[in-house]
Structure formats: structure tokens, C-alpha cells
Length: 348
Image (cartoon, rainbow, N blue to C red; front, side, top):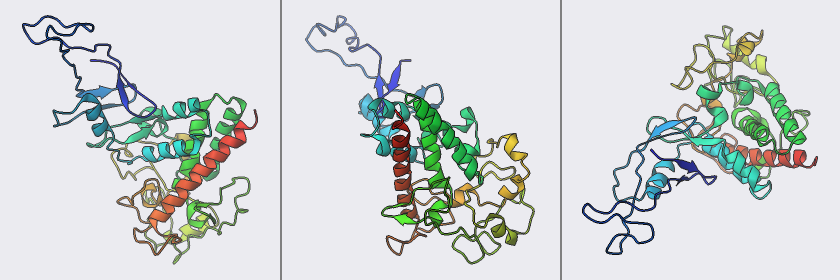
């Protein structure tokens, strides 16, 4: 076993102090100063097979015996599958704050991201998305229609950062929430476009930004009625599906996740919503929401199971094209995080 450190660049560095290996059998022991008797210093190479830290454990597999350690690590740990959108979140954070915030802060925020292991792929996972260890609260991610509650959490965390600009962790959680709002909610479906992004959402004036009044009626482009392709969770919602558009008329929605009887993945199955939210009198209504996977736009490519947008595009202004939605939401998150940093750093 030996110690490694994941630098802010995302690459791992060896901390083992040994720099030379034992000489071939029968030769004198080499030294760092003099090498082997013939003047050649034998090299040493570490080949990790299993790696773990405080949050994750994963395996290393490579058939390339000619690789150096650095090449092995780079090839094996850079095949990023953004299944949990961690890579996207990290890209947003770095794009938004590099050159704007102190490098110390950017480094600190990058430490919230780690490599995970899932079915042979190695996704980047942000710690707040590690539900096994950190637990799950939909208010942190704007899931299950908790839009106002999500913005309340963002506001609390930005206030903590405003009071102490060294509280990088609070800003990291706020930034994650902001990015999730654009990725998970229906705001991008109805928001006004401003250049290559949406007009930034203001929770204090939600209807004052040129946003189209949200409608989920039959025949609309976000149809939640029986004629639409976005089915409810009938384990929680027991009403008439044609009544769903009226439940959410004029409101922003987000996808359901971790609701009872509704798992769509091996990772969602053990995840639960806090009891204080499940026991709310309006929780039944949240069962009428589409599943997160069917409407969220949180990775560059159209994922299997996504139903709201399509791969084909009729042009750069096609609001139903997945690629356009991802690009606009990505830029909106960057701009909103930059604004949040400037607004709350300016207090000092």
C-alpha cells in the first residue's frame, strides 16, 4: 500500500518517497546518489489494483503493461461518464469562477468532487450527490417540485458565504443548487432567451423576467395530461391524470426522485426522501410529477429514458432540441453562479 494525493487538476500524484528500486539479483544495492554499480539506476513503478479514500472505493484494470503509472492513472481515470452530472457540475464551477474568484477558493470547490465507481465506468461525483454517505434531500437539488424550498436553501448558503467569504463550503452547496435549478426544473422550457442563455431566474420576482406562464395542458409541449408522454408515480398520486396540468398551472416543476415505489435505478432504490417532506399534506401532488430521468437536462448527451426533448434539432433556436437546452442551461448556470459570487463577495 502507498499514499496518493488527488491534486486540484483532478490527477493523482504519488507521495511515496522511494525513487529507486533494488538492483537485479546479485548486484549491489543501488543508492539515490550512485545508482547501480554500472551507473544505471533501476526504476520503480507502482501499479494500483484497488484504490480507496474516505468516500469511495474502486478498482483499476489495465492490460497495457507498457504504461507508466501516470499514463495508467490518466487513461483509466479520465474516461468520465457523467452519469451523475458530476463532471458537468465541476465544469460549470471552474468555468464560472476561474479568473474571477481566488485560486484558493476554486481549489477548495474542486475538492468537493471525487471519482466514483459504477458498473465499470468511472464518473465524477460531487459529494452532495453521494446519497449513500451524505443522505438525500430534494431541496438541495430542486427535485420533487421543491422549487421555493430549494431557493430558500441557496439563499441561506449564500448568506453564510456573504458573512464569511472563507466559507467556501457554503458557496459550493449554493452553486450546486443553482446549477441543479437550471438542469432539473422546467424554467428552461418557459424562460426568455437572452443571447446564449436564459434570463437569470430571480426567486423574488419569478414572473418578472419575460418568462412564459408555465402550462402543462394537453397538447402543449410539456404535456402532463393523459395524452402526454410523462407518466406520474401512481404509488403516490392516485388522482385522474387529466387533472395534473391544473395542479401545476403557472408553476415551475421539477422531476420526482426517490419517491416510494418508483425507483428507476439501482442507486435510486435505497435513497429516501426525509420524513418531514414525505409527511407534508401536499406530498401526494408531487407524485404527479414526471420522473427526474424523463425531464432533467444535466448531461451533454440525450440519456436513455429522457422523454421531454428530442435529439433532432430544427436550428439554434429550437427549444425542444436537447442539445440547445443543455447549452442554454449550462451557460445560465455559469452566469448565475458568477452573479452570486460577485453579489456576495462585494459585501466586503
